[in-house]
Length: 334
Image (cartoon, rainbow, N blue to C red; front, side, top):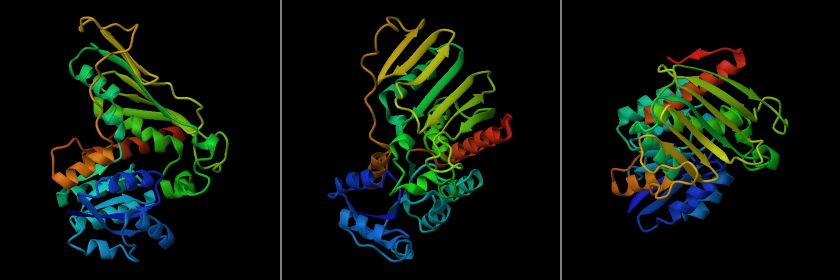
């Protein structure tokens, strides 16, 4: 039986992670729960059949606790990840891992030096549609790719998702970003997972409803230019009533669109590919990123986790996009 601890329970995904952890009670024991809010810690400790501890030091200093789930406010990640790495704890850390690029890089170096299992919440990699497109990209079936687009939007501001329990997520002073960074980091991860780091970026990021104040952005678009001439754009926000078209890949010999959970694809290199109807026999979806972490934590299996330096690079590029939007210019990625 492996022992795990929850360190911070403030994130909107913490309830789902709690449920999935409870489903593994035959393999995982949650030995302790900590949050700077004692009431929140007690609430999650009860859900997890565990105990709330007054200090996170009780977790770092307990050698029987082998792993931690960090779902705290983003501005606490730096300290918590540093202590988890120093204590050699395997770790799941919610995205984005750092409050800013410099902090994320420091965290990544500490995790890498500790040699522990690391995972973050980029769950879209496991979607069948994106696995399929990545396979076609790697096979060269698009020819010369000229344009790529990814969109990740919902109605969070319109529906008041962050009005009460998760209000901190709409406060950039705590979350490090607003809607564009919150959802756009998933789009950024998919594009960087498929195509690597862009050469330069810019963005246009805005507030619409002011439901969460004038400092919390609610939607935006980013443009990214790659050294091979490929242009990529990402869209993200909390003010969309629908998000039907989530990806488009345009090449000289192939084209793909992901729309309404269907993939439409054609390529001069793939016999029988027919853009008029959805692709059948897509790859099987992978478990959620959190469940992949549990798989690795419990069994030490070779599972597809997110490299910690890659996670830090998402912080780096997102920070540059915000800088480009603020200064109305292209920002070169170092």
